[in-house]
Image (cartoon, rainbow, N blue to C red; front, side, top):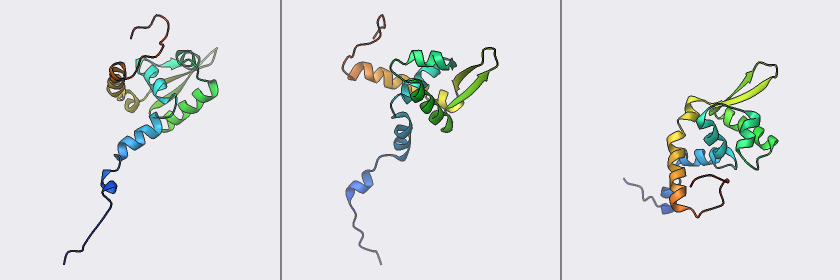
Length: 122
């Protein structure tokens, strides 16, 4: 005997769980730019802060901790003197490079121009 099942069609059109998890992490302000800088190579904290205009030390530290807890970024202490901390992507973090490149290309085609860094190409 088949049960008469009715449901809301919107329930069948939920956002993909993976997309939700990705944007919960990378959708936070500054997370994407941090990963994008680290795709190139490991970076010391001060250099990372300089590479992302407008980010505070505290926010950078918080986002790096979140990305580290998610398994995307590793924190490494360079023995001194002076003692310096650098950050690099894990294998999982580095695997984001193709997706980030695609998003950057998409933005160049579909998002309105905004003032870039002096001397940067668009």
